Amino acid sequence: FTHGDEYQTSQYKIFSEMYTSEYAEFMFHRELEYLEEYKDFSWAPEMLDVKDYKIFIRKGWNFNHIMQIHDLKIVCPGWPEKIKNIIQEQYDAGLLKLSVYPHSHMIHPGGKITSMDFYACTHKENPLVELEKVMPLMGQSAFRFAEVKEGEIINLEHMFKNTLKKYHQ
View 1 (tube, rainbow, N blue to C red):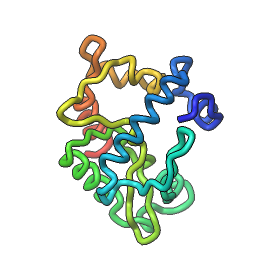
View 2: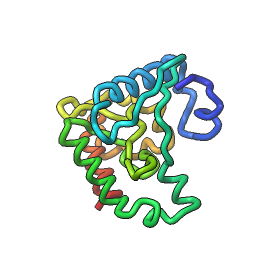
View 3: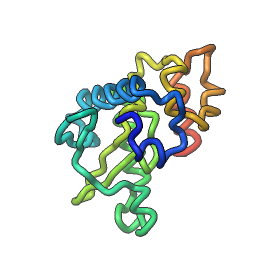
View 4: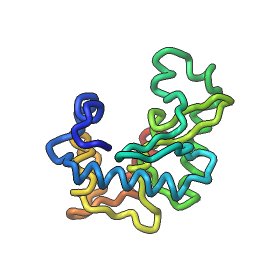
């Protein structure tokens, strides 16, 4: 979450002029908050260190990277169901994690699957967030807000459920 970081600005076009150093700091603290809160769950990545607005976690293989070079059904048999189980466990724990796609998960030696991208979380009991807090990260995909927008507020529980309907049927 370093503002101006080449990876974050050149790799992804979703980052816009709204992605300021203050916003990067805000997202860093969100990521850290949820990683620490849910660290004891089996699907939480192991944090190794936090330094200079960087969070170091035990590396696994990102599902998207695996899909590019291997058959995911062979590398991780039953992976869709395993990810659905993680999402359900997160929900049951009170967590609305909006990044529920395969690229937001890693597999580790021995088959353990962990989640990542915890900046895109909120608690079930508080699903409303100001639009301005998520726009810099959403950029061109902001169309997803249309059906969950209530004035200048986004209902992240509705967005979570819509995402599940679309991608995890």
